Image 1 (tube, rainbow, N blue to C red):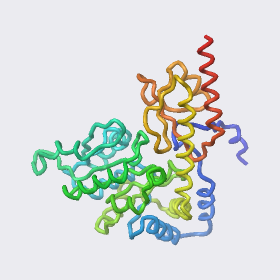
Image 2 (cartoon, rainbow, N blue to C red):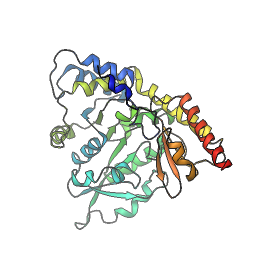
Image 3 (cartoon, rainbow, N blue to C red):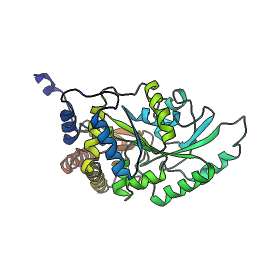
Amino acid sequence: MFEELDALPFAKSLGSDNHSGVHPLILEAVLKANRGHAHSYGMDPLSQETEQEFERVFGKKGFVHFVFNGTAANVLCLAATLKRYEAVACSEQAHLQLDECGAPEITGHTKLIPLASRDGKITPDQLLPHLHRQGDQHHMQIKMVSLTQPTELGVIYTLEELKTWKEFCQTQGFYLHCDGTRLSNSCVTAGISLKEYGEIFDLISFGGTKNGLLGAEAVVHFRAEWAQDMKFLRKQLLHLPSKSRFLAAQFYAYLKNDLYLDIAREVCAQAKRLKEELEQIPEITVIHPVQSNAVFARIPKAWLKEIRAQNFFYVWDPQESIVRLMCGFDWTQEDTETFIQKIKEVRKHHELS
């Protein structure tokens, strides 16, 4: 059945970790959940078991709300905690600012205050000039800081940097939010546990889909007073899953036996190997530290079309010929070797032409 699907092209891609398939253990868990009938809307036993797994990895009682994508997770964190006149400070590179199609403003009714950054990281000092009109009725009131960990450029906040932000937010009375679409990767490369993240952040958009899940994200927080609002706002935002056991099954497998760390170790190791191989080619420059599963590199513009014909990737900055190479959970050393060989062939071709 469906033999025609065998003819469809499914080449390995460096474009996004969204391009990869589903980790076999995640898919196995979904299939195991596909037995008999179960209550809907999070009242099934598997959803409750999965919530206990979240409590285990974060080391304390929390509240988990499954949604279908990262935009919904981010917007729900904002909409359920902020008043209509309250704003969020974030990096100008943040997904909230650049890639949510205005959803925080339009759906979450929240103004964003973008702060300049080179690598996606921001500091409390950058926010201080924006605080002089706190209390002014003519001005939006900053109430939350959103940090992306790892940043959109694959760079990680250290534990010390995060603690500095936590102290600053506590002093100012701000909430601290984590856009953690690839948070598991930072657990590996920065040595920061989810338990430590749970002590630092008030709310976490906990990633799944970019980490080998079929399609599931979660909002995690630790305040009972927010849980009731999220319960209703998730429904209004069109992201209450009816057959919630299938989203829960994915996270259950992801967290059980710390599969999330195994996947993170592999993708980060593959990205590091890819970086090392690229650095052996004189014309290529890796421009950001590789601390997650992303490699940003400057590659001669004349080479790009031929290289992309084999393995797709995004040109991040066309003017500077900077590309983003993103390793999915199933990217292998052999894939890197094939990719590098293609670059060398293209390089030789241009040397001879």
